[in-house]
Image (cartoon, rainbow, N blue to C red; front, side, top):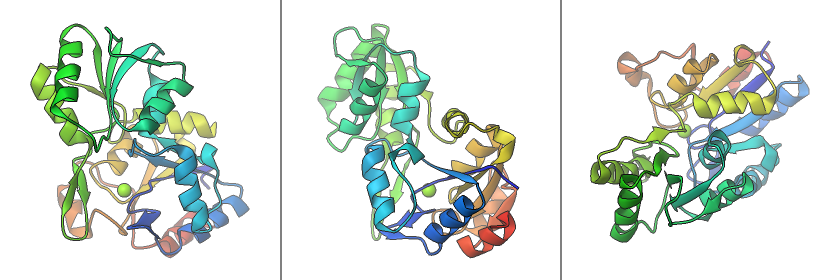
Length: 252
Ligand SMILES: [Mg+2]
């Protein structure tokens, strides 16, 4: 039996402001069986406390400590220093929690996350600071989110603007890189081999979990469909339709 389960959030635990059916029940079942859970998300613009409050509103057992965002992972991964950020307040908060100082004066890093107030002025500042030697870091490469009748461009779109402007590739921390997952395992205090990574996205969750050495399960409640499997870069160990099915496989 697994000792820990890492769950993605958007499209896995909730979708469009609603709990995915059975998510809370699944988490309770895990805890009853002594299996630890951690929610790992590429979203960089919400604090762990805000995410935990949302999950609690669905009746899901968790606290801020059980949330691991790409902002936290970025702050934890890098050696603390000075950083110019393109992002929302949750990114700066995560960095300051790890001892960073936010500065646009010759910073050690330029760190790019999700920013709904992104401007040409920020782009120009970021490109120039990188050009002068700041290390270019991206919280995640997400293209965007398909919404009801539109799309919301994601962090990756902003990262691409900066990368094009300064002709330097970023270091990515979030999924599909393994870094965010490996740090998640450390946070759980478990070996990757004892962890099941569950997510709805074949291009991010599954490669990240696999690269970190975890067993992976694709849950068909969000982004990816069964038809996407043929072209997937990494095949998941399991494919499930629902949390009810996952519960059976995990044995909770
Ligand atoms: Mg997802």
